[in-house]
Amino acid sequence: MGVVGKVALTAVGLVLVVAGVVAVRTATFEAPAAVDPKAANLASARPVDVARAAAHLGEAVRFQTISHQDPAEDQPAEWDKLHAWLQSTYPEAHKVMTREVVAGHTLVYTWPGSNPALPPIVLMAHQDVVPVTPGSEGSWSHPPFDGVVAGGSVWGRGAIDDKGSLVTLFEALDGVAASGFKPVRTVIVVSGHDEEVRGVGARAAAALLKSRNIKAQFVLDEGMVVVADHPVTGQPAAIIGTAEKGYATMKVVAPAVGGHSSAPPKDTGVATLSRAVLAITDKQFPMKFQGPGADMLKAIAPHAKPVVKVFAANTWLFSPLLVDVTAKTPAGAAMLHTTIAPTMLKGSPKENVLPQDATAWINYRIAPGDTSTTVMARAKDAVGDLPVQLSWTKTPDEPSAVSSTESDAWKTIAGLAADESKAPVVPGLVTAGTDSRYMGGVATDVYRFQPLVLKVEDTKMIHGTDEHVSLANVERMVRFYQRLVETAAAR
Image 1 (cartoon, rainbow, N blue to C red):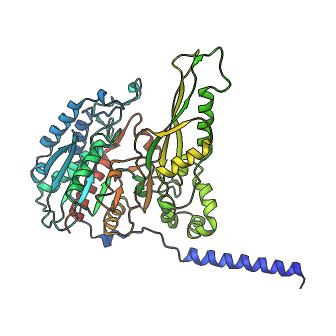
Image 2: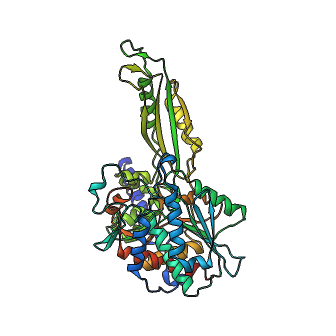
Image 3: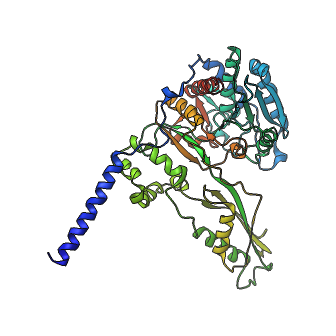
């Protein structure tokens, strides 16, 4: 046999070996984070008064607890009215829980368990909402702060984010307390008042719990939902956030000599700033098929087309292809790397005046594995010797740790999510921010999930126009929280 024949035979052999490895790994592939609801020993569901819960959510929407970028625009009296309403609307829950207020309007409730040696559970839902874009009010089907119940839904700002969670959680707690349930494990409820802008309340609540040496079994906050039409399968999938990205905003300043625009220097501050911003954004963080974003695809692979399972079972071979496929949408790409987004610019106050400095703000969402230190180093390397100054607008929030998908806490929450949704449960990465990012010192396992069923298209209304939640979702959320408390706090 000639050299060419030997090379060809060797190549065929290698192909057969690779194919064999791929076949074996695919055949033996098991989805990570798989759960068995039966093994979770879940509490039974109690009847839900959906009309009552919906009416209460509508009432809560009417309190205009709007967090503005400038706190001077907030209306503290609206939070006071919401607090009084909670106490009068949910008397049974308030009989069994102690209530504390920190940082002005953040609420911390404690329902003591009979065994204080057991780590407590922490449930979170924030009180504040984002503003409605001025001039868009007429585009709403119902006025955004009227809390209308119509067409099988509750309409208004906060119906989902996050008064939907707050109200349904209290509906569940009130009902459980009225039933005579006695928790073995302590239940703590943390409700931040400024999640949408500053998170001061959640930080204060976390500091309070840490000062008491509380180490919870788990923390559960908003973050992910049951997606009715998951992009990979086209079928429902319950996504539970096991981590969330860090948050940081970089200020880029290009000092310059001001003056009249009729005699500009060779390099103006705006030109220098433009080159710096482009240099930073051109030096993108590489996308990697790893972490919670990759875990989501691996976990859903057995429920997708066979080729997806082949790819997921053999990331050693197909990672580049998986990255390319996942990154076809901005949301998919965001799951795989730290993102860089220039958002604001400032130059001269007048069109014919050269600015004495030009400034840009760049927002980063930092993926697990990166830090604000590595982000700053990468930006400085990108701008090189350009005469610009880089700094953080405030201390960055680092990415969270990745919570377990094997712990008892995961088995309870994921098992309940699977039982309620009848859908596969998969871990995921929250690319936005939640108040739970401050709870890393309170619990090792911090999960982010609302038991809502939404289509991908539906998620656009969150922070947008016509925010609303269906009565079916209201019922589902009350039932989920009721079963979660009666399962997790009973042992």
